[in-house]
Length: 263
Length: 349
Image (tube, rainbow over the protein chains, first blue to last red):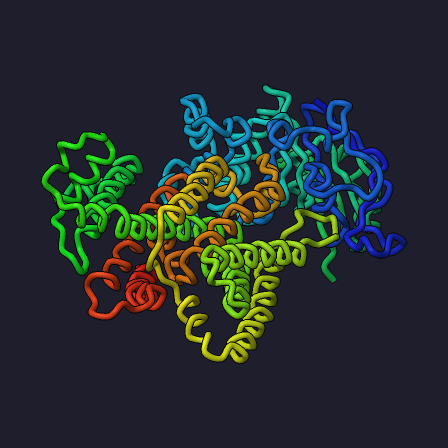
């Protein structure tokens, strides 16, 4: 499966089409079996880009193509079998149990007139073991910490078993131990099942370790993209974030890492 | 009692639904036996069996008066009451789920104000003599209000889904405020009919017929099936728009279908029996405390509980109190303190 953005432009203010666009003229093709990271300063359009890719927002011009077809032509449930999203709105209004929230990840596969099958329950249990959340299954989602809630939502997205997984700062509240375990698991899945990840990161060093390709956005445009070896330079950091930095290879991380100049 | 506690603890929906349905049947029969003329409960049972099986021997030694009282006077009233209770509780469940607001109730979108306004016009123009026209006017008023509120809150901005819960609630409040002013004005110019208006507004099940039973219960049946079909989508909507959309829920479609369903249930209820508060707000909350928030459980259990509560309240005003007081007043008087107690208890944990 492939996901392709063709000439995407988008603006939140529909009444003034000439005003500054949130995204303009984005072209990018996401291939299967790769880890992409989206980076850029606040308001650069990272989340908007993800929302357009999932079809939650409709582009003002251009199309998002999935396997050569416009994503807006897919039935909603079929699209939910291709793409899963861990969004930032992981606040949940009602006191569902963690298990109930995770089970919602199987919704795209359960018919309106049917109940979830044994297979769905097995997937839920297996995934909960992977994300180390089995102890929390009976707890209420309103009574657990932000990081635990994020892991719940992450587990739910994994249960969707989609070829594309979109992460919007999915590790922002998670402890380092769980973040690394989950990212290593994702890396294994990428090799085993051709899973593709598109993840918004704020932590450039984290992104550098796990991404096959880093995409830097600024003011709604792609500044540069490519592997960390080629695009992660102090010139890029200066251009995107307007900050001086030093970049060197780190053995422990087995990738380039950035050190920022703080004064 | 032990089984009840067990069922609640294990959250066994099936057992709970069966138990509650049985309680509903029992309370309907007890209620039918109570009143100005006392008829014993076993006779009520026999009259019912006779009607259901068409076997004249079963009710052979029961007087004609008793049969008429049960079949033509009490049962239509009690069953209308049960259906309205169910409809209001279901409607409340839907509104709280869609609007993600614990304060939402069947009247949040101004359906009650619309119905009241329609009814007031019918009363002022003295259309009440045609009998059916007050409920009809109320229903038309409720539906027009709903259409207006949905039109007001739907944004032309194409980002995301079209109905934000804040927009819907705000539109409902604005329209209801305008209509309330209209109702006040109508009361002011109504002269001696003002007492009719006030009595209608407070709600009553007096002199309901089988037509009312059929009207409300057919709305309720259809509403129930639609709600159950969309119960899982309603659960997922509480995750937030973005997540719900990524899980394959067509939010706009689900919201519109359930809003219309909830509003129609509220509209038919208000048209038949006036404005009865608290059932739609209170019951879903109480049920959620027992079953958890899963709407597949909350919807059927709320419905039956709403029916039981309203039949209970109506029986008190009809058969226990010396003077019949408006049922809307009674539900608030019983429901209010109970709710306060549960509310306080639930957030002390």
